[in-house]
Length: 130
Image (cartoon, rainbow, N blue to C red; front, side, top):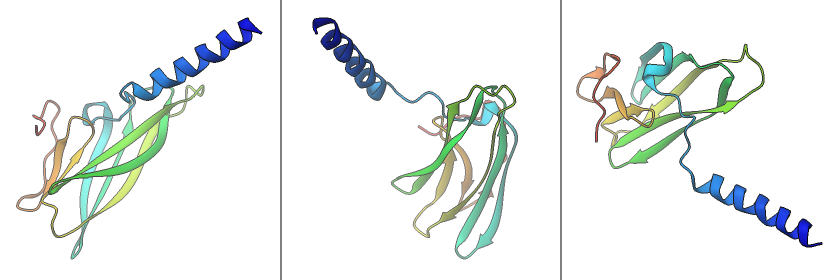
């Protein structure tokens, strides 16, 4: 019984630590092949973001938007898979409300669109907004 209790405690500890660790499988611009942003609407503004993740054994788990002030951050979350041929291709449409002035991509918050200049050219090493 004591061994079973220790085993259960170890599993709960591992799960707890996993929940506290930052999520590392977020697709970034520099890890994306053929990253593309298109403005497909003007009122309201709609953006189509697409690309292909370049890391093996990862596929798209979920795409979400996080709003902070007057910016939207698009996050493509990846999940591990046993399939070597799996890839993280995505095609996502984002609606931009009138009070949003910029849209960023990934944890690095690379600006991909802003209200003043429209779709921004994406270059590897582009400085993230802080």
